[in-house]
Image (cartoon, rainbow, N blue to C red):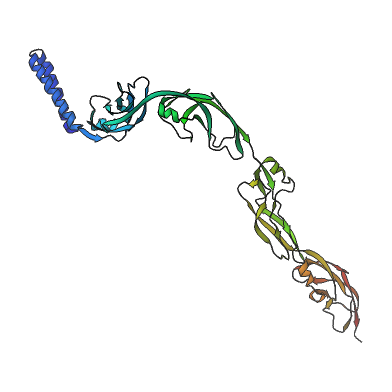
Amino acid sequence: MEGVRQALALVLYAARASWSALAQHSGLAALSVALSLSLWVYVTDRENPKETQTFNSAIPIKFVNVPTGLAVANASESSVRIRVEATKSDLGRLRADDFDASVNLGGLSTGQSTIGVDVQPPNNSITIVDVTPPTIAVTLEPVRTKEVPVRAALVGSPQQGFASVGSTVAPETAVVSGPESLVALVDHVDAVVNLTGLKVDVNEDRVELQPRDLRGGDISRVTVNPTTASVTVDIEQREFSAEFVVNPAVSGQPATGYNIASITVDPRIVTLTGALDALQSVDAVRGVSTEEISVADARADVVRQVQLSLPPGVRAQGTTTVRVTIAVRAARGEATFLVAPQVRNVGQGLVLVQPASVLVTLEGDAPTLQAVTPESITVIADASGLGPGVYPLPLQVVPPPGTTVVRTDPRELGVALAERQ
């Protein structure tokens, strides 16, 4: 950059000198200006020199001066590659559409001809060094026109649960024109409409028409008149969705003395999708059943991942299985036992008249109660400090583990104490 600044300073100095001398010596002034310009060109070329390189993008070929009544049926190339010479800064700004590549077909007749490709740069500072290929083969044929049907080409699928049920297109025919061999291949023109994810009717006014052969392949180098068509497509909902509760199918009975305490399902609610009549076959109150889960002889919780039982034509969204937890608990109840009480702390010299037995009612799990015996229940009456006589003593009941006392009958024990004879 320092060199550039010095050169510019010299140019400005020379220019001032030229204008100063202009009034006195016009010849000397002209010479000074020429020297200044030469210096400017030299500095510019040193700082931004020209380079030659292959242009990255292909340049599309245009056909010009096509003879009346003829059309291009085929060309060996549709684009060319070029090498250009330009300054480094210009090369960095060039784009493919800055160049014009053309083939002049003026004066040619039907058949194949080999013609040179002319590439024009965007301005005079850009030089075309090489064109690849320099020539191309072009085949000309007489122009032919033909009327063909217009079809609605539907691609993609509507949103799940929806379907296309009919389409219309206007106009119903179009005229294609171009080289006779290509026009002969055209069977119809398609108005392509994408239905992907749709759930509403389609109404499009300007759908481009594309010429196609009998197998649906694209035909190029022909024109279509009109170029667009109006297309309507009717979209209809075929499937519906609704939420249902899951009601597991449980079979069998837990072991004796055990009951089902609760049943939980995860997820409890599922969304089903299907045709309307298929969904209506699912009981809205009872909900969706599952495959059978047996709790026969169970003494602990039963946990299963089970499949939903769905009617034909119905599917579940997100999952086809649920987790079912059946809580099995021992049954609770009451049992009454006739227990002989224990009278403790009878005074010395006294005799206890054997008291009557006591009815003790316990509560607990059925299996635990079944294992209880009268001997496993302790009923205590305390006679501390009592002399001869009859006394109502409160009772203390010690139940077996896993049980609780509901009541005793009687609530107090009648105890008779007498002096020892």
